[in-house]
Image (cartoon, rainbow, N blue to C red; front, top):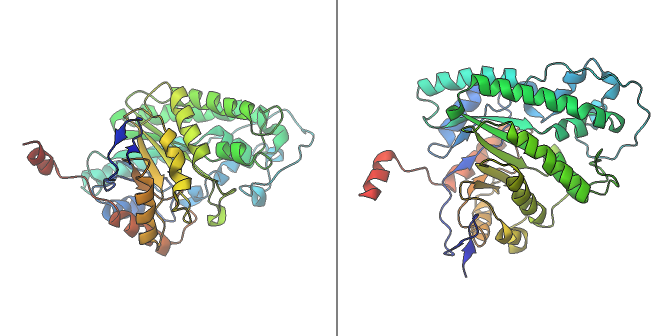
Length: 369
């Protein structure tokens, strides 16, 4: 039996040991420096990109973005509702005036980059590793934080603010040091669970073609704002509130379809894609849609199949995935922001155990000779 690589070519069945580890973004660490130091030490020779751990108030995805709308509190869902993935009945808008404050992603990125550079100069962060900024697409903030009757009006305002923040990040951080990740959970919810992940641009609200087309159009605009030379990827997600998905995927079919579609509309290089693999899925049926993956050769796929206290299960998921995708990196299913420190340490150990570090430069030269 042969397997299929991400560019559609056939390869031998034997799966090479993954070398690269991807960190989705969030963490329970107290400071950015603590996260940089811990990840660099735990995963030597395995990181291509390194986020700042989304420390402090950023640990729970987009909840902290409610402060952007402090001047318009009437448009917000209650804090306890955010991320609960439940349906809402639209009411009557109280005011058409929506005011936004600073969204903060640019400030955090620029401050964190200074710490990143200091540690790189000290030899803590390895040379060649790029600083990763994980940004939610506007759909995630608008859909999860705002009441339905205000979503259509607020979306273009928020998208403009996010793109301005992205522009500032790219103006300050050199392109050769920067990587941008788009976090996409609400989009998967719209396709898999439209009753809870309501759409303001899908006419019948069933998560069908209109929703998908709207998702693709919006992603094309976002990807167009990332400069050439800046690496870019995206993280598709089924949620992690309470370490539970908002819906359990039947298989990777929706993920593979979106990987293909999003890559096609990006109109620029997509350097990596991250997708989740549930802990209980070691069966071929879950991974089988990977045979339909059609990506360009420069795109690295990261499978979020590593789970804490589950070394053998992680190895089995790697083995089964290798039946359908010859080369891939590994990761956790989601960020680690809702994870206790002992669980983080366990999964870091698993990630290190199932991967091989990149060869040192002298080893590469020896191989060529």
